[in-house]
Amino acid sequence: MAKIYLDHAATTPVDKKVLDAMLPYFSEKFGNAMSIHSFGKVAEEAIDEAREILAKFFHCQTSEIIFTSGATESNNLVLKGVVKSYWSKFNKKPHIITTAFEHHCVLDTCKSLEKENLAEVSYIKPDKEGIISVENIKKAIQPNTILVSIMYVNNEIGTLQPIQKIGDILKAKNQPGLPAGRKLKTKILFHTDATQAMNYFDCDVQKLGVDLLSLSGHKIYGPKGIGALYIKKGTPIKKIQDGGDQEFHMRAGTQNVPGIAGLAAAIQLVKNSKLKVQRILKLRNYLIEKVLREIPDAKLNGSKKFRSPNNANFTFKNVEGEGLLLSLDMEGIACSTGSACSIGSLESSHVLLSLGMKPEEAHGSLRVTLGKHTTRKEIDIFVKKLKKTISRLRKISGKVLQEFYSNK
Ligand SMILES: Cc1ncc(COP(=O)(O)O)c(C=O)c1O
Image (cartoon, rainbow, N blue to C red; front, side, top):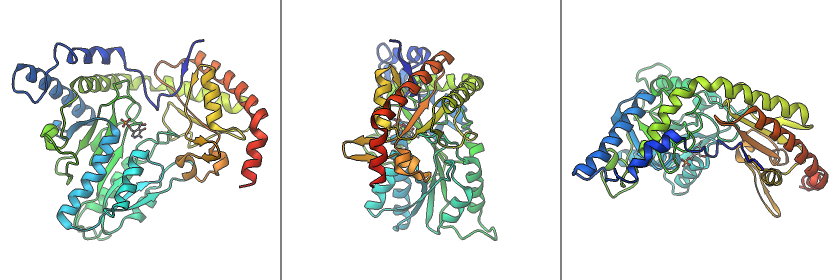
């Protein structure tokens, strides 16, 4: 049975060109970039070259890019590093604004900052369509707000956030002397987690108006375990990891040279593939229309218009997400669901709940994310198998689920 992979928001296969760019750095060019001999120089040159490629892509200086192990680390560094810097200067608790539907690496970091009494955090809810209101961000600003962290594209429902508009608002707030402004002790920094946006949306940091931007290699046909962080020159942030002077003293630890070379190669490919967005968008729209037309009681979650071109997220009434996922897997199809289920406890996706969905609705969700190799034939096979699976699951467990939720 040929397998069909429709989970590109989880991870993507490493592109052959990316792999080729990485291979020499595992073997003949294996040096440590911190060594001063020729082996080290070769590795250092590879990192310098990669940094230039990223700087061009993000429209910033090379000294503003640091390599990390992925978006989780980049996001941790942003939140903890900015808070640490504020404490070291002002010795008091700052306030952070983020959203209720960020990736767990942002939410859990915020929760741990709150738990340790190091920061107050406001979690802004999106509207029903999965979009954060610029006005709500503006309203949440407090005198001690030091950071606004909003994801560019949501990883579950694919909705696109108004990053540039939020950037404009913060720029205006940060202008000293504006009549409507307030006396600022410190600038409000703006961070975006662009992990799910990189393949399809403009990541020019000047246009976006961000001070910090996180990304990950494995979502863009690059390797796992590599990512980067853009840090605008002059941003007050402290390192959170000790043990070395790598990455402009911001990130201790031997650099992952093959990963860095791979990340740069992946970014080069993203640059060249922007033109192919229309193909994937057409295919994704074909999928959405087919599912909504052929499967009863199916609903698309999140805005159709402001959404990543590769993402479709559905809810199927009286179907349990995990069961659906496992049944599809047996049919050779890989998708994802936001819900985590264990016997006796049905936990729904925090993203879908943040849209105001009821747990029973959120529970039957399925995320389908297309990739650059996805074909129309694969979509046709997928919808056919999905239809069959849903009808079977509804027959088996539809009633049980209905009763379970009506007794809650
Ligand atoms: C929006 C978002 N942020 C962060 C991450 C974590 O990235 P990494 O796997 O590089 O740590 C992911 C991965 O799923 C993501 O989708």
